[in-house]
Length: 376
Image 1: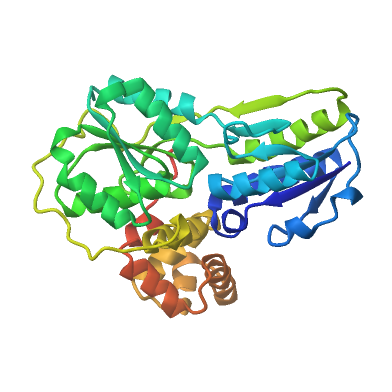
Image 2 (image 1 turned 180 degrees about the vertical axis):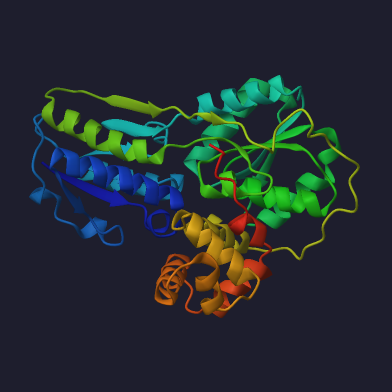
């Protein structure tokens, strides 16, 4: 079986979550011995869809992966006009859109799980933080949060700058005893800003990144199993392709709550100092934000590191030479150099000096090198 896939361009290139979905997709394709046909998202409107094999229901079907409601709506309209059915992944279909199936994370249930955990911690005044307007996932979180809390729901939007979003929250933080962050990048950013402002508050988030596990404090998170989303996509497509008639399916992947240091009874608000002051940053998209780019690079470093790599990073942060690192870790010098080159490649950096600057200049030395291997 050949499974044709179109992926939203910016999501595919920039998102760590899309990378996880790809892993699951490719893993299940390999297991089933199916083939992947990637249709270029930049030229998908000129692709000859008549070349695609017909399903048992006598239609042509593609997988469409993305999170931007605007981009997804345009792609769905084009595909519908050309008689192509869609299995939509990682996005809630727009109202009145015709799709054969949907596979995504169950964000609404996740909001319920996070609110229940905060309630168990004695929190009664949560906020929802860092929701991005052009994100289908965040629209679902926003809707579910507002439905559950009614007129008491307070939502802080990310308009393209996490720094501005943090400033807005800090200026009003005395009312809240907890906050649900839309993703782990927003959570790590907010914790840094709150710490600088002298505020301690219970923080939880959606996400399953290494940042959540290794950050200080480690962040309570509702895991997002995007790998499972990728695997379920292959199974859903195969089912639709082999099933005749007018069949639609909906798959929701539930998250798992991992409780860490950022939410516990001891975490209470302390008096805030002066709010942070930042020059406004105006950007055009979520991935254009400097903080998002920085945390994404951090995640790529962490994903590619084992305990030895993190020890190498710790020693690099103290400006120890490669030869000394090899001596202290009982490794060959070439082994250390190879590992450093691999770390640089994962981080998109060229030199050890750039890596050192990133670790120390971004304030991530402890985040990257602190050992928290016993945490889930």
